[in-house]
Image 1 (cartoon, rainbow, N blue to C red):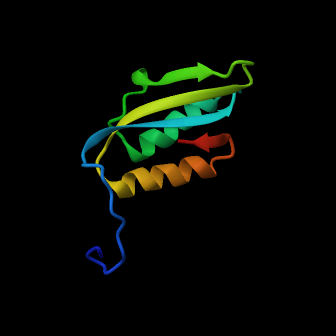
Image 2: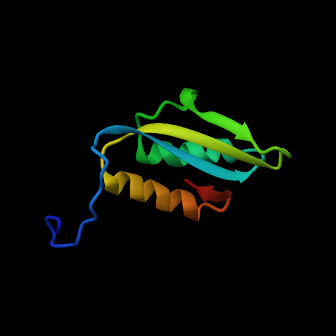
Length: 94
């Protein structure tokens, strides 16, 4: 398949729009959760930070932040994922 510009597109089983949870893990340091929320809000302006779930690792060194946002396209999800994975505070994005 190709998009309107002639570029190849990726097949996806996800139907958009949908609620999409994304889990971001990083060191448990001041500002980590806020930095993650700011990135998510850039790509999903209607995201409600009140719904963020946070879970520390068993030893308390790391923090997992789960943000469920309303995904409108695969491009939106991919772009958010790229920005999160390139953020210096982020270790893993699932």
